Length: 104
Image 1: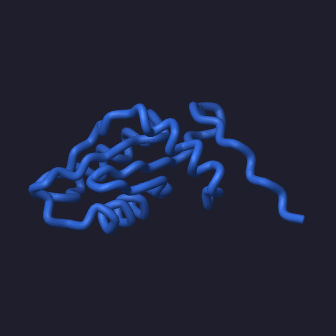
Image 2: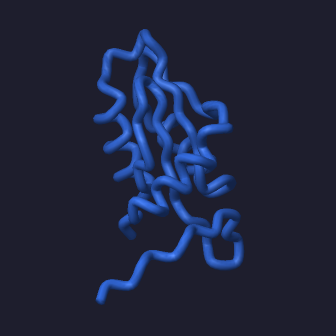
């Protein structure tokens, strides 16, 4: 699933009011951190991750790796903050995205 610019903008607006719920530090992306991200996405669909200053890895690279491992979409990476989205199961969806425009 690829997000349209309209859907991405909508998710960015929702994420603006959120605080990071997971922080990555010196050990960067460990299997435990990946599991925590997986559980958070299952519970919330849209999460914000903070990359602390003592983490030497590039936040954009971390975002791509964790998104691939958790089958999520990278909504945005601003500075040391990562926003990820993964839709919940049909019955458990919490976020209703704007519909993608039909191509003519």
